[in-house]
Length: 433
Length: 144
Image (cartoon, rainbow over all chains, first blue to last red; front, side, top):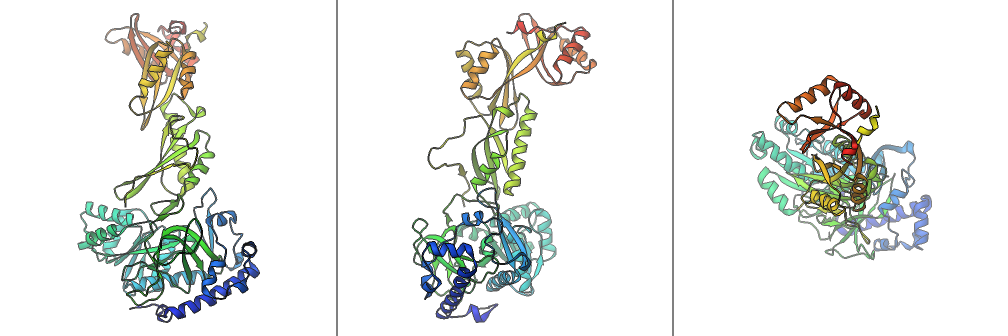
């Protein structure tokens, strides 16, 4: 096994657990004393830091949900002052309010370290050239992988997303050996490359894909590895955890969650009860060493299962299997999280259309395509096609701004969209993985 | 000149671009005994607008609205054309010379000759210009 941090990565399970207990105890003490949010939550739950006497006592602690982050917009739960922060990232929230994540220098260092370990575990290092085709900016993907790859001494090509033909030229000319992007974007690149007469398998040096930010399957892995001549590895993270944090190792059997950085549990989404390894439930993470935005038992909403056996690579850090779904109605469109509630929220501010809507998600080629159907209302009715086209363009523009993804809008007749009495089913997802 | 008598009420109906929508509109008007004198369909990607001149526009508006259609009244004007080769050219040239900009237009040829229906930006202004140009405008009372 090739490790970035041999001391931590090769630690036996018992030592990992000891270390986690110390970090958890310390975190709980600190939050109880200094965070009004966690202090109140723990009081409500009738739990005191003294009740945490061993690692398994984590189940006594209260959960944190995405809605708590929304309610604390922008920075009410931060534990670091603005002077101590060195960066913000912003991701979509469930309504118009996004989620802001702040980072101290130590937070960035830990994030980078996590990825340095991960990238090393798939055999990348000095001499490799990594094309980072995740978006750079408020989204965590681009900058996260960028610093992780630089840390291990690889050469980064910061292409970000888009301009696919140029990306393929650069991949060839700068001899990229690895690429980080969404699996669907890599499929799209493969198709565009073929149209350009370039075979990624034969005409490039690409050998590793670090693929994530959206769900994919084992079948897609086999197809991509075969077609593109690479090894494809799953990467996982969310902005609340810092960003993309964990990847599979060369064994390709679930992503390793570094025990010094995070404590993972799988819980029953309904009862909140902790589940055993191998049982399917909601991924819940306690971030053990975050300064700006510590989180205890954060319910991420992704459905998966845990594998706590020592990995074939020798690491005892637990592994999380592929994400199999969501507990809520969050959609991932081209790697970006989209909640139907955001669409609803954005439509409320547009006078020309009603508030009923339907989202249809499909694939055009390898890429996701999102269509939103909205009902034209009386005020915007016109006999002129150009006026109606303008209504449609306005809605498209506003939704694009609100969601950060390209949206096509279809105007439909008033009353033609289904109405719901109970739980609304506003999403038709035609994508098959 | 009482220009208002030349202003004709067109009904414009928003419709999705899928089979059966025109039938739904026509059926509703038939039920109400509303007669359609002229109509056209304009289509864009995914939707269209059905524009019609009917004998009872208020009744048509009420009925179509009540079954969920988005309906609007639009002021249009109608010009008589000669029903023979070159008839449209004469009118079109006149409109061009009078500097009248047409938003859209449709035509029909009936018992009393051919009629060109025009949707223009400045209706009153257009009526005056067309009258001066020597063309014959048709009064709204002919339709409803």
